[in-house]
Length: 400
Ligand SMILES: C[S@@+](CC[C@H](N)C(=O)[O-])C[C@H]1O[C@@H](n2cnc3c(N)ncnc32)[C@H](O)[C@@H]1O
Image (cartoon, rainbow, N blue to C red):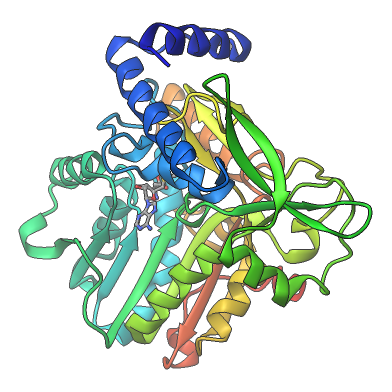
């Protein structure tokens, strides 16, 4: 496909989404990602990539993936807003939740996928000297740079306290691991069942140079293995799109290999298994974000938009438990904020504009129709005393 045809396709997609066209340099970047994906499809034996492989390349291709673009995905000119971007109240609540574990882990925190660095800055500010070392694992070079700037603007001495890890440290490590909206950025696999009970995997092919969805007998090794372990556990309904995330369990395994003792606090969009596999959600949980427009067309605007899918917290819990961790808490974001005590400490002397802005942010963070219910906080611990475990309530633990 030539650039002019690509532009025509993107124009059509932008019109359908009712969003502005990318500028010339963004278009060039997206075109490279499109070409890289198309080349991979053409080179593959089935002339198709699994959903997981497709999204991995769309998001993390070293030259043309969304997170390699150098564009900042947050803010008005970005594509989406996360909780730390809405209000520092959220990061303060996360700081409160890890505070009890800090002495047991010698003040060492490792954050995966730190975004703009706002949560890191707030946690370091709030917990002060109790943080001896704050390590960040970040795949995006542009975000690493932004994180450094954010921390410096907050007067945090990066040389002293903060380290960016290019690879995981040698085990054994004692630390508190945290991550907000990290796992939903690690691609899942998608599949469905037909009326005869045969499983089919969602694949992406090329049709007249455009990406198109096809359903083929399950080919991905990781999904085949996952189905061997799970096919009898769910009452699968025909033609519902389901998701499984063995790569996220891979992340759990590598973090578990690392930590000889410590705790983990993760926040993400998602549900416990029963709700996760609810057949009423016929089209799965994939969410794409382009210029703050949310939609499900993951094969549009590749390299230019963020692509996420929700977390199955029961699966996550099983993966950590089978690696020797115990569950320390599982709740939703509204409950996390309410129980953290940070809402009682909010200054009351704000001007009216600041007060209105804060109310609006709290509404987004806490209301059931916004992030309050669908975003969950989960915590695990290994080899640390009960009173040193993260402070996250077990409101929803019985659902796991
Ligand atoms: C949706 S953003 C969330 C950013 C930030 N935590 C926040 O809440 O604003 C996802 C982040 O995860 C990072 N990421 C994705 N996969 C990762 C991995 N395997 N290891 C570390 N970071 C990763 C991305 O680069 C990005 O910073």
